[in-house]
Length: 211
Ligand SMILES: [Zn+2]
Image (cartoon, rainbow, N blue to C red; front, side):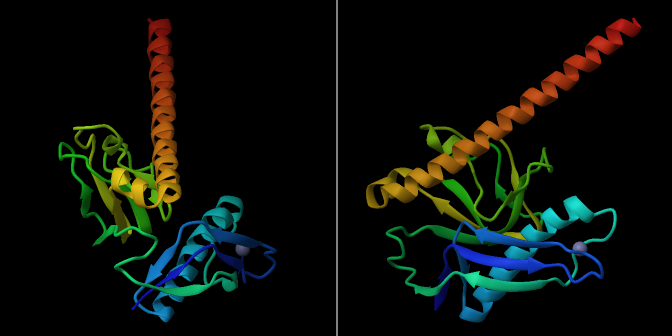
């Protein structure tokens, strides 16, 4: 039986002596598990990972978040039927760390959503996708192919492949949400590109000045 948690809310507290760090997190994307126990562990893991990013960003030089106290404040665990679900039969696949999820040049028919774990474009490892993030915008245009390889991050990834045209007929709100997520990713990629162009221009100008 597959279980799902929506809008899980967690409180994570650092146990390091003298550290006052405590944070509340909402897992905005649904988490899936093969059992209630597995679902709990995965949700706790997701909350711990998010908290660690926050914590280590603040206190990293002092200590890292290790073995924190994790408490669920909200988020019901509900059984899901893989047949009906939210009106969509998304194709969900598991990947080991480093395994290729999307391959450059392949036909782009689906938008990808990270359900669990992380993924990143192999030519830009800093652009990390985690649970709830979407990628694969080429699928929004007809007859496009994948523009880069995307691989599973450390710890692997569970990825849902959505056919947006199909989904928008059955569950327009869900399709719109995925569309927004994948557009947000595209804008992020463009901004990164602009920043690297600015950097390159700066280097060219500096080199010209040195003459
Ligand atoms: Zn701490």
